Image (tube, one colour):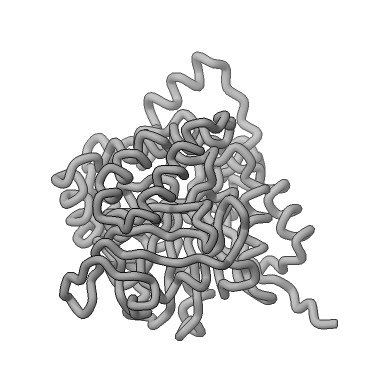
Length: 386
């Protein structure tokens, strides 16, 4: 975590902005420096391990592998937290070590919450695929080499184009960034000269994201409690994350708080259709067409509810694009069995997307039961000048 973002953060428990930093180890101009107090840490120093703490030392948050864990007490995973506390406490000044232990003790005494249980299950599920260093290195290699045109092309055409032209020097954050694959490959902050912060509940995927985009910052945080100052970001991105949440519209309200007036919010989500399946039919459909293992929390977004929420928040819809018709679902299911790397072939993918678009704008419109499976929406806050 770079020191330069500290003054942008808020305490996820109290909301205070009076936060300080202690570094056990940081990277300064490619060199390792240890044991520095807040006043001795430079803005471009990247803290590998240490703590963030409130000025009264009541709330202490750990930093490990450059990732600050900025979760409120009931959202914390105590086992995960204590594993980091064990690594840090002997290297902290005694006063801060005591404050960190007091924080851990307080969290242990807290009653759990439904949202906290949800977050912990999601973290466990998505951490599992990158639990070991080898798994993380393999995923990083995939991020750097695999051209997944199936997701890159529509996201570039329907979402990123609204951000890339005037993003120089702007602050953009991604909610639920995971391993930051899309940003790393088609909208890299170093190439487009903007400031990027990614947030996610999966700590170990954030480690991979940091490896993929080392010059940016990543925070373990809940989408329902984003620990960044209000009215700060110029834009927000969500690539297929909102449908993992118990209350997606609440997350949209949380994102809205963090955006400046006239900020852009662009999202990509699976959506409900009016197709009705029995339990047996649903089981068959999942077996045939599922292209990856889903979390038990996966759901789909109600499109009308989403657009209604944006309108209530005073957003203007700049673009709304349905995609992924029943044709594409069937095609992908077939190709994933006979030619698994089809989506890395740009020409083939463009052809599939073109046919998909034609069907979405013709026969699919005759019946909601035919699709679409997903939607991209780009919106901007309306000018609220008095």
